[in-house]
Image (cartoon, rainbow, N blue to C red; front, top):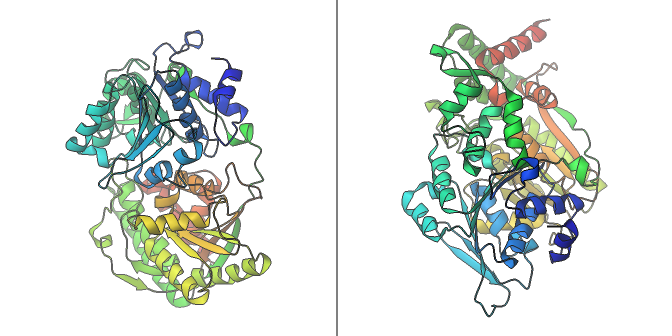
Length: 532
């Protein structure tokens, strides 16, 4: 289809950028043999965060509906993003559906909701959207409902498709089962292979097994993996990567924001150091030294065990111990859920041992507020206990400023109210603050009413950091975006785990993938610097 014709067909309130026209065209096409895209009905949109992947998908679906080639769209997303698609007032579908098109949008979850728009047509055709999440469709009975609805005139879309990177995961198998019943399939992701080429297998297999021509992941590893490690069962490197790229390239479109959208500048992070009190520092040193000894003596220590233990150091620099909850621990590569790997972390009892970073944040907030009486501030906290303490302090000291929070397991009304505070279409005129945990709010949200972001603590996962930064740096942003990172230091300027995290983030290094020996090396370096 000619790009000019696509542009004429789009009746969205938001005119498309040129790169979005290209993406919509690729999604609408069944195949494109002259570039090697010979397996029809599948495509991967790997545009960087903020380039408008959902916009392109929604408009492509409407064009296909108008061409009588599509009746139903299934959207499978991580749980926090489900509402980003579905919300009847602020969701992406509400934003970009053409007002005259007959549409039914259903949220397929434990409590089903639905909204409709557009006038019925004489032929009775309606474009039906079903929005659900990966966790929910693991259950065979729930999945059976979707399987009954799916047909060759259906399109299944996986948002944040690395959720199926583990070939043996239940949710991967669930998505594949639905895919077999659908005529079309697409995957959306801004970071499609955070761990290397191995992450691409399941995503490509979901689109069409013929792309790589491998019947299973074991076949894929045998062809492209260099095996080693314990009993030679681990992939220690990948070979023939150009062949992987050659096979997958015709089915992928990948654009960066800087290539597509003229956005304001993303300013370098400002590091602010909070000096720990001697009492807090003594607790930190004791925990750090115990960990160094444990890592040095335990030759069987794994990276997962190390990162969970080191989690304690981050807790201490944030001023508390205990209180680890679902979502506070990084995703483990071998599981489908974030989980706590150590029994001593499975407690909801929180012991406060300091407030140095919180106190510094309150000083910073006062300065920012004095400089901008319409301040829209977004604050990210690594831990739920840290978020709750910050929320309580702000509520007490600034009771008239609207305050929202975003975290896992909260009530829908509370989350929606927080999103409204930083939605440029409905946000208040005066100052507001939204505090959130990146694990629950780093993906899919549009918070561009804010252009000032503070990190009270950081996640170990590089992808989470990048995602959380881009909630405000995306189309719709009109001001340069400022970032502040508050890190803890010892009483005499000693470095802490916070500095390790910032150094890794600056180098675009993902600490969640560090080995136990890498953690040991870093902690020993911290000890050496302190002594010298």
